[in-house]
Length: 607
Ligand code: F6R
Image (cartoon, rainbow, N blue to C red; front, side, top):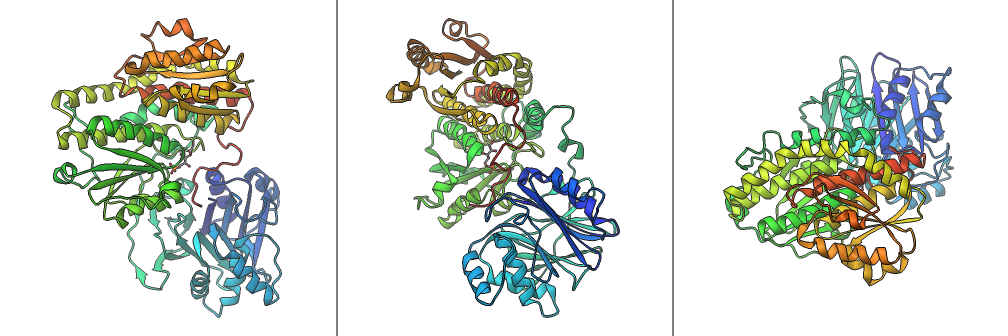
């Protein structure tokens, strides 16, 4: 999960590469580097954030019109200058950047070492540079092809050489790679936003393809050498969407974008009467009527969105629904029948575990529907049906608006499936549609209560541990609230069903320990109040998320974060927002790097 850049054209490559790397920094930021060619290749790299690389090249820009760059998230070797990409062969004539893992790294290293090779780094990438140099006999493309044949794993690699100085050769095996087509100049990148300010026309490189890039454009081939006709796609995203827009952090901006994200994700897909039309979902009513089960698979925040989906599908469709962690499901040998629908949820559409789990479905003859935010992502291309979330580019590593859009997508899907199965009648569909259309305004209202989250943040910022509890849909929200807090505030927290507390964790509740309670599910309200009383009896502090009509909670809670009263089924959409704000403000009080939390990266493309 690193970021890759490449440039060939009339301009100086160095500044273009560094600018692109900054836009890719969310993919990894423990070191960065560039290699620029003007016939000779100059490599410059630095440990740490891209600012360190910028400082290094300041006043000493490498000159040349061809170059490759990389921002790293370490998998092989510590994040040091030596391990930063690009890597060269010993002659310095072949230079490589790479994203992903070479699984037979040790075998290749042993073989090269036996032939007398010495290595300047601990990385698997350096081995690729050695191999390309060894395999080169006058044709860079063929040398790369032979190197790929020797290298197992999921990766993208980009190669440049003094021998063919006007060309960059890149390969995609799972890890994402796009080509941006300019006028007399061509860009390579791990994803579209990195070069969107230069061009809006892109070639998406598929798995097991190579691309040969020159200033005149790009030629796509399969790894086996067959030529590939690939049409460019035109991207309409607003480049300004990827900027901070006046907020202190991308995360806060993205939290505040959520009303718009709901509107976008619903747009043109649901009418006032609740009928739903999903443009890239091809299955028909007969298929839906024959369904026996719904599976959902995802990781992290997307998994938490799946927890909500599981509950919604069960309630709305009266069908068995299971959400499974993708990294578990892929090895679980699950029993999936052909009349079962697999839904894979992934913001990036590139999460390696989710891609692998999603592929379990076709192996069992069942259909796979992707819910993803990235058009043209690998998951979207694996899928039989796609439901795009339309959240726009999410820059903050901690996911907020993409999660929100995943919830909305699942409500739409549940309505579509429910209508076809006859489990949702017209009146119910209309009521849900009405509720969904009101959500943007409801979320604006919650955002207007940000002071409550700020007060709650001040109350827990010095805590050692925080617990999150809730029942049913509230438990799913507790899971997401807890994850958000952990990942950006580094404060230990744990989420559990409210009823589970007394089965062990209650032993940890002592004077002053904060417990965040979500109370939107009226059918289990009193049960959750019992859990609150257990906490209060041990001196714990209660921070509640509750409807603004709920007066009873004032009796129990030390602090309440309010959301507008609404249908309990839709309440997760509102209830998550104060918890996102809570996590944000705790992290801010603690002075953390909110958009790029330590040890994490935006897109987890390795297993
Ligand atoms: C947390 C977060 C991660 C991702 C997870 C899956 O804020 O962003 O937990 O949700 O890595 O990523 P995607 O959705 O891209 O598959």
